[in-house]
Length: 385
Image 1 (spheres, rainbow, N blue to C red):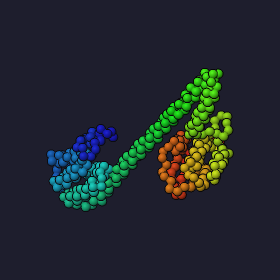
Image 2 (image 1 turned 135 degrees about the vertical axis):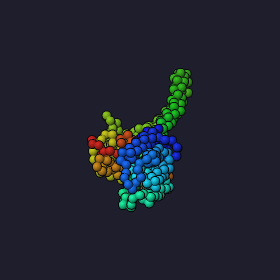
Image 3 (image 1 turned 90 degrees about the horizontal axis):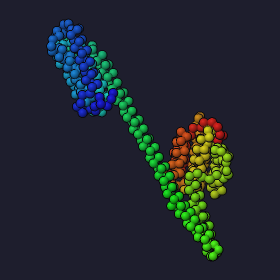
Image 4 (image 1 turned 120 degrees about the vertical axis):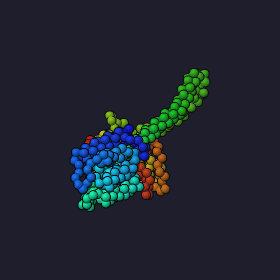
């Protein structure tokens, strides 16, 4: 059903769907009333009977705009029809459809009011009908119950769909926010490169030019220029090293081809941290991983260990890698007290991005007695881990 044909309750508009439904039911009820007239004790079919047969379905014109008013009108036609002495025919159908709509589209108050109207309508029909209609009460109750249950299920399905749409929108918003943060971090790093390294390199170039020009005439000044260049170069290397540790941590040895870390590489990471005086417990119970999953696992462990050493002064660090079906689970925990919630900086963003790119997920935050990084990655096959 398109939005243009489904106005919200209370707008007063008549949708094309409701108009079509009312028209079909008017045709059906009037046709049955004229073609199959009821015998005694009911009154013969006349203009009033035809008018009532048409009035019931016409109440559905405002079924979505004013569902309770539609139900009241449909039930009122049923009661008036019984009081006038005419056969009921198909007149209950508009009332049941309106009852379904009240439970499908309304809140708690509307549903309670609709139930009360339905009970009153059934009681009026049973009381005023010309034959003993008590035997029809079970059928009336069962059909009304079906309308109520169907409406309630429709309402819950609509609520679930709306909740799913909201969650999808929130997920997209979070992904966009993370992407914006990545762009901001890249811009900040570019600015640092320009402002710090660019300035230092320019100074070095100028000092080297001056030293070259005065080297023969003023060797003392040239030596001082070389000393300044050396100091500036060391400063630039320190700055470059700091930036490279963020962008792509340096390896201990050069590797030919794509980096494919194994358990030995994780042990090497743990040894580096142990060399700083921090105890590291490494437990691996995995299996073969795809190359991408192995790299993501290694980089996440690397960043988590770096953060643990940087933000906590002491205490053991535990790294656990396990395989569950086709997923690999990673937990990196370190002791600490009163640790604040992590600020979305480049480290956490990079870890989450690595997990996301491999089709996994990552959570990081304080836990009782410390801090925990938990990642779930698809295992695949290939590199042992």
